Image (cartoon, rainbow, N blue to C red):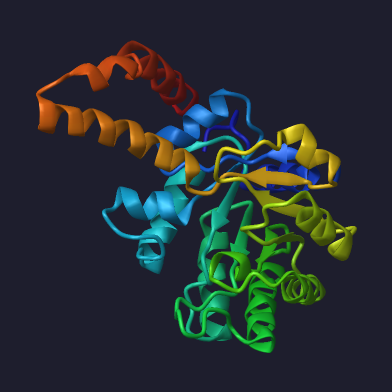
Length: 282
């Protein structure tokens, strides 16, 4: 890496500091180009999106292999000067040992943080038993500690997005993940101020991530006032990009109309953005 670019250790220090106070938005790019654009807007960190990446590979969310995700994380880290948090799904391991090995590989490519989910992918039993989920989280913590301990660990409870919207159970799981070594807690799918405030209070003083993946009346300032430390958008930006592309392509296919191209970004602007990135990296 160029001597003027921050090292992995630098990025991890910055990332930990971002979680110490205040509230920041950590948007979710799906490829190196979108990550570079978000960096150019002044965002202090980015987080990958499992859905956005999978769609770029013509796969459904959670349909990418561990090798694919590790290669993607390496690309994202190399493309940016800001910390990259990995959406690391369930840890890509059938057991705790497999999770530990996967996390070791993610750390080696330079991510500043990563999350481990407690969902199983089985609709009949969508969440791991709590003790199993805790052990998987502990395995991730072991891998981080053995690598020096500076990668931030996010514990995720998925109940609200897998058909188990039980706030008390979600809070109990997040507290258990905190005790198991998570540095930050995250329950995607929380929608109300009361739900968000309850989670923040339950795991304090550890920071909480809130997902906003839809048009919402809450603003960043509203969410910050609830004590949330960071806000992510999941696959929403990727869906926005797909939405524009799909509308323009359908107009062309179904009506022979080029009207969908009117909101396209200027090629000169994109070339200028990435030329700057190439110079900085060179």
